[in-house]
Image (cartoon, rainbow over all chains, first blue to last red; front, top):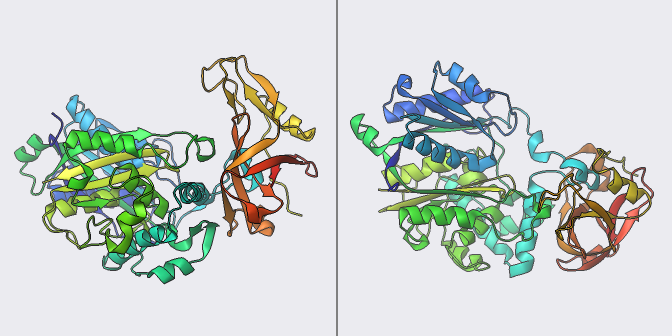
Length: 374
Length: 129
């Protein structure tokens, strides 16, 4: 029985925005904070698992961070799977502990595209660049358009998602963008790559976040103050590039979520609060559909009238998500999911039993899902 | 006229790019029945290396499209706003392209016809609506 056998024992993060620091330093800052939160000495950490910095990949990156941490963990390295890597690494940490490879794992991610180089997000896509096929945004635009065409999706569905997340971020003092928007603002927002408006797109950020993973038993032995049990976790991948997919409007997020829900023994309707990866509004909306919170094509009815805002049916991205808190992908969502279970969130949802977090990467190539609980 | 963005021609994809120079669009086919692009050494369905080239009819449908309002590369700045589309050939393979003609009619599922842009040093497989 894996349900509840492992915990998030500690969380840590840097500020978010334009920080002017290298990614190794940012990882050290987040790891140090996570270890302090868990009350764990770095000498007891025997796995250090990193997601590769998106904007500046390096060889043997996991070992560089270990050196900067003054650690010689038995296990470690850097995983390249886009944004889903964050939850995947938590999953890998659980597997490594389960098979006796390690006992305490640090999972961390840092990147600095805002003060460094953001070219990666606008990069040419192979020989198709000859047609003008550049950027991360355009691939999501293709999916956005296909969803609207197939389901006649109301433009206000995208607006509702952005409005909710920006409203939450506006109340988060650590958020990079603290500016709420109205539906009129959203609908008047300039095109970036039509059908994507500026307000459909996430931030570009410097920042880092880290978590400590161990068994619930180990957390009891170490008298960790606030361990949060992992009730379910899952992953799945599409792998094909957007233009080669037979269908643009369904994703492997459905399979990823199914694994996590089955392990946790819960249904979408049981979830109290959700941190949904929102690199673009279409990502958030399709994840809600594919996770089973609503029917395919029914997402506008689910999100309209503030139902995903704090106080609504399913509060989403209560710290501001990628659209408002930080474009640093994935782990900041995990941190907020942990805070919601601990009862220490800035916009706390009352009586949280099940706190869900989704990660995805590439252009919905990779997916991962985790359910935390009390 | 916008500067052309060069393509990387190698031993595997050379027939594809050479075909376009003759105004013809080729895709790859395998005995297993799979048809695909972009070109590869192995059939992605069964990993057979006995790959053949077949000429596309030129008929395709629009899967999706976007219109760029920002230039991610200086080479495309003069083209703004410009569209990029995904089309599915009648024979199955899908590819990235640009749609020319009455683009006000652009819609998912719309039929488009191959119109190889022979005016370029390396002709491209553009489509016309």
